[in-house]
Length: 407
Image 1 (tube, rainbow, N blue to C red):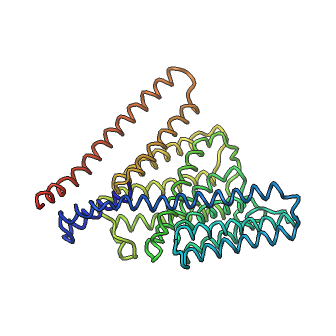
Image 2 (image 1 turned 90 degrees about the vertical axis):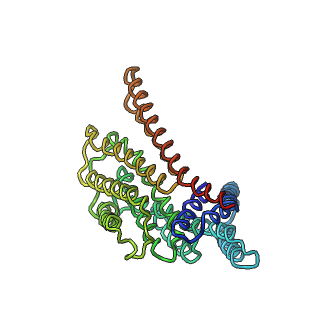
Image 3 (image 1 turned 90 degrees about the horizontal axis):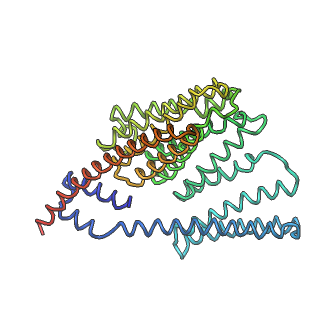
C-alpha cells in the first residue's frame, strides 16, 4: 500500500535524523495507518463512481424523453440541476455534514451539469460549432474550483478537460492551435508534458496536494500517446504541424524541462521553493527528466519534419521512448518504494511487447525469437525486482530488530 510504504520510508528518515527512536518507529507502524489510508481511498473511489453513475443515469433518462420535453423545461431543468448539485455539494462539504469528499463529488456532478447546459443551449438554438468553446468555460471553472477547494478530484478532472479542449481547439478552423487531425497524438505528448510541469510547479506552493493528480494525468497521457505513436508509420502525416501549436505544446516545455534538469542536477531545488530531493531519488528523477526531454525533442522533430508512411525511423524512436519511459517509472518506483509504479510499468511493458508482436511478426521463427527475447527481459526484470525488494526489506529489518531489543 503506498500510504504504508510512505510511512515506512519517512519514519526511517525520522529515525536517521534522530527525531524519533527505532522503538517509537515500530510503535507508529503498529498503529496501522495503512488501513486508514485504504479507507480514505475507498471513499474517493465510491464517491467518484457514484457521481459518474448519477450523471450517466440522468443523461439516459433525459435522452429517452428528449422529444417530449419542451425547450423552456429543458433549460430551466438543466439550470435547476446545476444549482442543486453545486449548492448541495457546497453545503455537504462546508455545512453541517462536513463531508469533504462527498461534497466535492456532488459539485463535480454540478460541473457536469454545467457542460450539459451549454451543450443543450447550442443544440436548442442550432449553434453549430466545434465543442472547444463549450469546454473552455467548464475547464476554467474546474481549475478555479480545484484551487478554491484545494481539491484533488477537481484537479484531475481539470487535467482531463484541458486535454479535451486542446484537441478540439486544434481542429477548429481559424484557431491559433489549428492542425490536421493526424497530428493529435503528437499534441498529446505536449499536453502531457505541460501537465507534468504544472504538477511540479504546484509543489512549491501551498497547493502541493494538487500536484499528484495532475502529474498522474500527465503521465498517463504520455504513455498512451507514446504507445499509439509506435504505429506512426501507418499514419498519413504529410503536413508539418503549424508553428504555434508545435512551439507552444512541444518546444516550450523543453525549456522548462531543461530548467528542472539543471535544478535537479545542481541540487538547488530548495532555493526555488521545491522540497528537498532525497539522495536515492535524485538519479531516478534525473533519468525521468532526460527521458521527457528526449521525447519532447523527438516529437518536435517529427511535427515539423514529417515523412511518408515508409519512413520507419520515427516509429522506432517511439519504441525506444516507450522502453525509456518504462525504465524511468520502474526506477522511480524503487526510489519511492511504490510497488504500484513498478507493477504499472511492467503491465505497460507487457502490452508493448504484445502489440509489437502483432505489428511485426507473422511466422514461427520470428515469434520464437520474440518470445525468447521477452522471456530473457522478464527474467532480468524479476532478478532486479527481487534484489531491490530484498534491499528494501534489509533497510527496515535492522531497525525493527533493534526496537524489539529495547522492548
